[in-house]
Image (tube, rainbow, N blue to C red):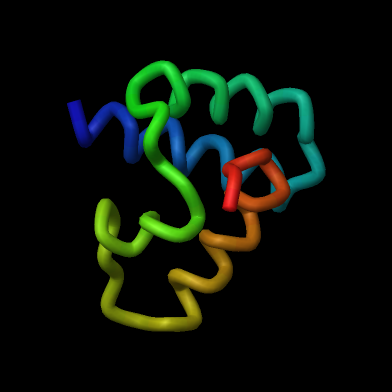
Length: 69
Protein backbone atom coordinates (compact mmCIF):
# COMPACT_ATOMS: atom_id res chain seq x y z
CA UNK A 1 0.00 0.00 0.00
CA UNK A 2 2.51 2.64 -1.10
CA UNK A 3 -0.08 5.41 -1.26
CA UNK A 4 -1.06 4.86 2.34
CA UNK A 5 2.58 4.85 3.40
CA UNK A 6 3.17 8.05 1.45
CA UNK A 7 0.22 9.68 3.22
CA UNK A 8 1.61 8.74 6.62
CA UNK A 9 5.05 10.05 5.60
CA UNK A 10 3.52 13.36 4.58
CA UNK A 11 1.58 13.51 7.84
CA UNK A 12 4.71 12.73 9.86
CA UNK A 13 6.88 15.30 8.09
CA UNK A 14 4.19 17.98 8.21
CA UNK A 15 3.50 17.46 11.89
CA UNK A 16 7.21 17.45 12.72
CA UNK A 17 7.90 20.63 10.78
CA UNK A 18 4.87 22.22 12.44
CA UNK A 19 6.23 21.43 15.89
CA UNK A 20 3.69 18.71 16.66
CA UNK A 21 6.18 16.01 17.62
CA UNK A 22 3.71 13.61 19.23
CA UNK A 23 1.54 13.55 16.10
CA UNK A 24 4.66 13.16 13.96
CA UNK A 25 5.82 10.17 15.98
CA UNK A 26 2.39 8.53 15.78
CA UNK A 27 2.36 8.90 12.00
CA UNK A 28 5.92 7.55 11.81
CA UNK A 29 4.85 4.52 13.85
CA UNK A 30 2.27 3.80 11.15
CA UNK A 31 4.97 4.12 8.48
CA UNK A 32 7.11 1.58 10.33
CA UNK A 33 4.16 -0.82 10.59
CA UNK A 34 3.58 -0.59 6.85
CA UNK A 35 7.25 -0.88 5.91
CA UNK A 36 9.84 -1.49 8.61
CA UNK A 37 12.65 -1.27 6.03
CA UNK A 38 12.12 2.41 5.19
CA UNK A 39 15.15 4.50 6.18
CA UNK A 40 16.58 7.90 5.33
CA UNK A 41 19.18 6.05 3.25
CA UNK A 42 16.57 4.47 0.95
CA UNK A 43 13.85 7.13 1.08
CA UNK A 44 14.55 8.51 -2.40
CA UNK A 45 14.10 5.07 -3.96
CA UNK A 46 10.62 4.83 -2.46
CA UNK A 47 9.54 8.42 -3.14
CA UNK A 48 11.43 10.18 -5.91
CA UNK A 49 10.85 13.92 -6.26
CA UNK A 50 11.75 16.30 -9.03
CA UNK A 51 13.07 19.21 -7.01
CA UNK A 52 15.96 18.61 -4.63
CA UNK A 53 14.84 21.38 -2.28
CA UNK A 54 11.40 19.77 -1.88
CA UNK A 55 12.97 16.43 -1.05
CA UNK A 56 15.40 18.05 1.42
CA UNK A 57 12.54 19.71 3.31
CA UNK A 58 10.57 16.47 3.39
CA UNK A 59 13.68 14.62 4.58
CA UNK A 60 14.13 17.15 7.37
CA UNK A 61 10.59 16.58 8.62
CA UNK A 62 10.91 12.81 8.48
CA UNK A 63 14.21 12.93 10.36
CA UNK A 64 12.57 15.00 13.12
CA UNK A 65 9.63 12.55 13.15
CA UNK A 66 12.03 9.69 13.81
CA UNK A 67 12.80 7.99 10.51
CA UNK A 68 16.07 6.11 11.11
CA UNK A 69 19.18 6.66 9.03
